[in-house]
Amino acid sequence: MGYKSLFDYAVNELKYSEGQASRRIQAMRLIKDLPVIEAKIADGTLSLSNVQQAQNFFRNLQIAEPRNVIRPQDKLDVLAQLENKSVRDAQKKLAEINSIQAMPKERERVITETAIEVKFVMTDKLKTKLDDARALLGPKGAQMSYAELFESLTDLSLEALEKKRFGQKRIEAEKKAGAAEALSIAEKQNHLPKKSAVLAASKVKVQQTKINTANEKSNARYISADLKRQIWKRDRGQCVQCHSKHNVQYDHVIPVAMGGLSRLDNLRLLCFHCNQRASEKIFGLRKSTVRPGLCVDSSPHSPARGDPCLE
Ligand SMILES: [Zn+2]
Image (cartoon, helix red, strand yellow):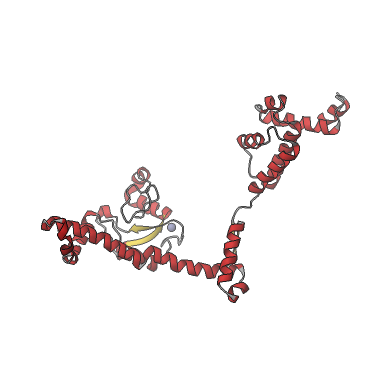
């Protein structure tokens, strides 16, 4: 037809202004991608200007993250938010979506043997909390770099978290639960009426030993909080095979099913993947696939239902 491009044709043959031509061409391209929007453009729900804005928005996203393909449904979701909006309101909406999507992902980069660069976005809420913590640390806090501040706060958290996980309170709570069980068994064994239950408490210590043995027999997988702390300390909170600290689990070296005991010398920390491999080695691939190590009970040693099993 003698025109260099569709744009050239639209301007010179169809007599559109340059703006009109480019809006129509962009809309056509988007309709080719997403045929369902044609009706919305035709009835005016989506203005050509907003379609053009959306197109530019998608293109810029693609340039920023070339490896991220924007799915048609994501495009439709964005377009749905531009329906019946003025150009200005649509602009605002896109800026809002952009600020969420443009949030850089967290990154870790090893710089030297002993230094790792970590990049992440902080919300203003976290920033305020950090500033508050800095203030509470006094003049020392004010001088700290972010790295120093994080180290100082992490030391405090580690103490608190260790207590929460293996601390006296937890051990006492476990003992209490054991004692309550012992008490009720003592009641039954001695045929004591409820009122006299307190008297039976004096016998609890003796009973407790029996109960513990009974527990060990009835639930050989049981690992007390105290034992868990010993394993955790010895293995330094990491997988003994790959040294990962992610998703670490208590593992019986000789499985309970093969007579392994819940003792320090038969327990170790393994990450989920090493644990999977270990059980595949022992039980064979088949069993491991059938039972992917997800916890189905919620006994005291176990994580929440559905989480990887701590054994
Ligand atoms: Zn591992």
